[in-house]
Image (cartoon, rainbow, N blue to C red; front, side):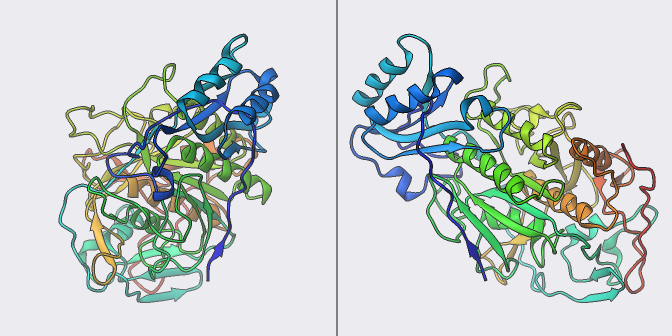
Length: 479
């Protein structure tokens, strides 16, 4: 069954941004209801810049704009508290309205920025590698002993996660499988994507919320550069919580259906923060965003939505909510660098505990497309990875991307949080820092190849018999 919810729509003042039927990214486009505009009408957002003038700005917008106004706000954002929680307003307007509005809100004290509702992000899409169909990729064979389960027909990339130090690689035979502990506590994974294929067998229960620019419905509306559905949302989400392809199979999934438009991105992070705090899910939730900014921009000059996203992420860290993002697929792109050069990953630091995931192949070698190592928290399989797709039989294919790596790591973080005794200290205001430190430690990663990057590990000992024993090498927790 599916729990379907609609996001609340507020009306308030905002900073204005405009755009003319822009593509969302090289692989994402605005949903149908967002691209069909009247002649001369464009999409804008307005972002309040003067906390003392928010009410005046709201009045001016309502008096000037003749079409619907949507307010994106967060009730629990400390960084936007001075603005009444308002992040921005989103609306359609013609040039005459925008000119008049700017006159009203910018002639004396600068009350708001008015900017185009541009396509601000690009999904970390799958590279051009022929899909490989696995005939039994969604067939599960399990041995259960106590709280340990072994899925012997799990995709190879999952087996890497439970490959323990000092044991043979899981490619060596049938006795190897994906081993994991059944959850002792509820955890929640908030996925920011343009939907997932709810009919896929990997997904059995999800809650849904909808951004301002997306088509309603429990579907995967991810599009590639040719306008065809590439199942990006389904593929990456299945690595986090899928019943057959996922790491955290007991976690509850919440889909924040959002395009890569500026207002949708800000809405998704704001909605995740509010929903987690409202439902008392701090230290139980992770948020994953498998996309990056379109181009490298310095922190001081970054265009919207990135300053708003950054401040909302800070609010999440303060609320003990982990956020996972990809390092980027651009290491081989002439317009980029081999090092991380896009947001949000560039923000990662000891004082900003964003978790950044890079990609390796199934023997632990660095994937040539994956950016890093600077700013990369940990590495996980992202080459020839099995995931949920509806365009291959039997509804599972393989892909290459740092996007799916971020969801796989998000699933691992949720898995750790679900254990009776998590492998890190859960402490108010420090939980996310402790998670990040643990992922960097020998208790959650090790070098699968000589001089290779440290690849994630779920801490199980890789015992070949029924079930397996938990080593718990993390007896010393990080305060």
